[in-house]
Length: 146
Image 1 (cartoon, rainbow, N blue to C red):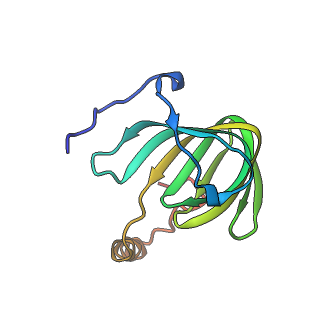
Image 2: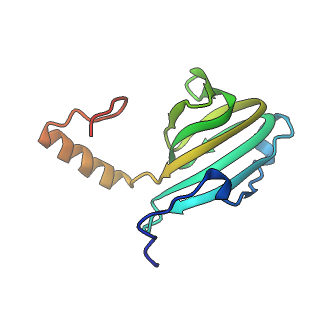
């Protein structure tokens, strides 16, 4: 595969949006219409950044990858698979662990930027955890440590 450009930048309106239908069996209420626009992808296909928007509706969503989102416009009421709830509004940032479900309820419209990362296979994750333990790393989940 070809190497990505060292810098990919532009206004969010420059990213072409394409239909991204929600799996019909996941829709709980309404007729949500979603679109996605790929901004960038890493050369190893392990990470990508995209814009995503959706109209009014309620649906379950499966996060196949780890995903961090920043809400650009509108809001969404989210219920995670553990039952925790949060309303995300413009400027909010949230993390969704890969291989989990969440229910999204959008009253009018939401637009987000999504930073997605494929999860490592279990042996690789274990190796990283072991390395961190040996280094004495406390980890950065939930914090800002690098």
